[in-house]
Amino acid sequence: MKLVGAGMTAVDHGGSLGRAKTLFPHAPHPFVDLSTGINPHSYPLFDLPATALSRLPESERLSELAEIAAKAYGAPSAAHVAAAPGTQILLPRVASLMKPGKAFVLGPTYAEHAKAAAIAGHAVVEVTDFDALAEADLVVLVNPNNPDGRLIARDRLLGLAARLRAKGGLLVVDEAFMDVGPAEHSLAGDVGEGGIVVLRSFGKFFGLAGVRLGFALADPLMAERLGTQLGPWAVAGPALEYGIRALADTNWQVTMRARLAAEAGRLDALFSRSGIPVAGGTSLFLYLSLTDAPSLFSALGERGVLVRHFAERPHVLRAGLPGSAEEWRRLEDALAAWASQRDEKPKEIAT
Image (cartoon, rainbow, N blue to C red; front, side, top):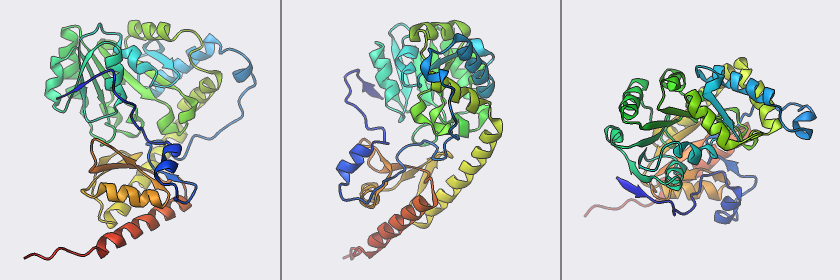
């Protein structure tokens, strides 16, 4: 177990090109940014109505978004949906649905969950044993997990939720990557039972992180409480328009899931050919585990290819998908150069 405090320092989440330029000042530009789990093939841009920018969002448009999101994610109804300007702003608000108590976060995972629970006044502990979670008042886990892609079956989650519900506890499941995960393990359709909050991120799968749109799925009372905390006009006009159109575009979603799965397979094969073990992941990122991960991170960075590294776990890396033929070529060349340098290192002679 690892205790977590509200005074934690800021965490590098990847995607910071400013930091990349500081780390690798002589790298060729532009960077091939594989440090995020965001789809490099974004939903097509379109002309927004002028009113999306010139007027405050209409409540009817927000209701339409909730209806479409409920259908897209499998929530029981629009009354079970709270829309927000990204899931990040929801984290401390969801944690505050419970009075301060004992919060367990299933790790290792996205660091902001523990920080948000601590900010909400909970005593936060990061645990690695799923069975230990039932001892907490508030449980937070990511499914599929970031960064390793760990997946927990729906029946196990429902069992945990029932144990927490029996004592007035709350299970929070961040399904930011469930758009490319096995939908049968989502808890979106179970939030009506109470004691469960599911978070869904719009920007990752649709490749529109800058739109800032996310959702909390919960029983109607909790969803209403979250909506009240967020206040009126929480979702900007452009985000409403993109959310409504993209979440309803099932043809694009089906085609994109197939494309991402194929490209993740190609990336897996590329790393394997370079002798780099792939230990997990999703269709949006792969999780790499190797003893010389720092060397690989630096070698790629010096060639303008940025992957995600983790200060507390120096032996692992996370790599997203290249977005173009040129980016694939640059990654392949960088990996080939690293593998060549690795193979040229003198071997120790046993005595």
